[in-house]
Image (cartoon, rainbow, N blue to C red; front, side, top):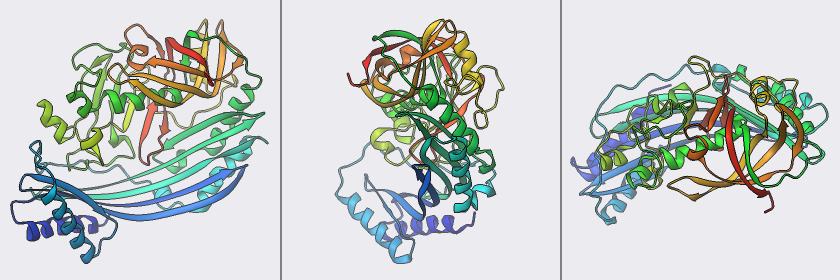
Length: 465
């Protein structure tokens, strides 16, 4: 990464000092993003788009008041206009007695090695991955996307702290359709060479074919095996509503550090430095691996400087755009697989079990008496924030399991479940041995999850109910 972003950030800090005086406190992030996306539908590429953008974000605290703003231009006039605009906003906003101050100078870890395959990916590279996905689906109708993204960023503040970093990510998410039902496969990686379009296409097709002729099942509590895509929804909601430092400070989170709230099989670690995350947050605080749950015991929640000050803690490096409003959120959450040192899996391979799609999930299914195999959740919404009761739907495949064997496809079901209860002590019967990184709709966000076998899940009716 060139020093240009860092130079721009420092220039904005100097402008603030010149226009607002030496007592003004400013923090500036300058980011450049190169995002390319290849979309396909009806088994053909229909769109290839690329975006190159720069964003300058300024937060200013002056005379006890705080305001923030951003600009998409880095010219001298554009930077000056940004500072003037934020300064005007700061002078008319209400006082901010909870201002936590600026992050002091601190060492920042170097960014992970930047994959040249992602950094210099061409449309033809993404098209080849799409072609492999489509061909592997063997005649089924397919749709989805393949994306590559690289980001560089720099930070500077009035306290003399400066940092810079870069990151790269590639992801693919696709479906295959057979007889009106879909199978899905998705994966996020740090190296383009690790994205296997053919394996993902085979996985999606196997699940679609196995989902034919679904039957209705009555509502009730069923033992379940949740595949990584469904587990990713658990992680996402736990991150946003449970391990969010602002919600914790407002007593709206279930999290109680030091208490064994989840099953001993559950260890949750947020680690942006494993890939797609920068080595510092929007306030300049260095990022690091943060253990949120250790063998079932809650250890921490994510904090920015504001939520940390409200609880007498320290920032964990989770400040982001809007975190002062909705709170700091872990965006790179990993549920540790069974076994201490099992790495993140490469693209999942297809097992001969069809519906289970990978051998790790099939092994969990084989040890379940009667229950359900669930591929994915969607349209999940919070009903009760404190206990994190969620309602939502299954999608992309549900199957009945009897005596360890997948016997029938099942129509989609609605559920209402407390996620902490479902993962509570005694509820997690088994954790898969390998994880699969699931991309989020937000660029650079992922959820790294194994399959889970849980004692029960509360299904309340059909998907239309």
